[in-house]
Image (cartoon, rainbow, N blue to C red; front, side, top):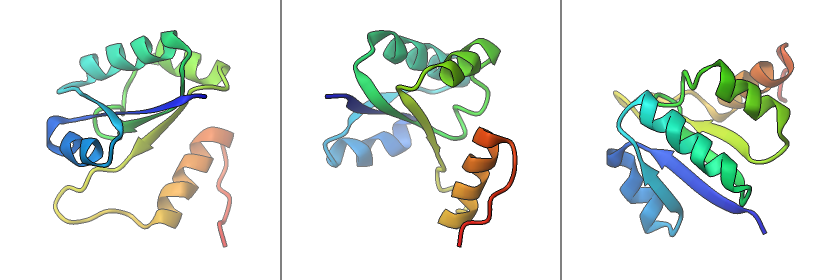
Length: 107
């Protein structure tokens, strides 16, 4: 059975830990990149949720690896900043567009 992991900043890690989720703290893009690669090498994760801000630029080699493997799925999640988070539909539409290259209306 594949595991779930969350990689995020120290400020949001506590909430995930309180929910019982395996959580790793990183403070910058380089740590995020390193941790994503480490977890992908283990082949025991089905889903790795990453802080969208810190996971924005993982590098071409990591993105290529993500696209060529079915698992784990790397799922960026938004972190609340300034009290504004886009709607779930907008967020999913953006993820679908990134994955398949064109916009799909979700209704």
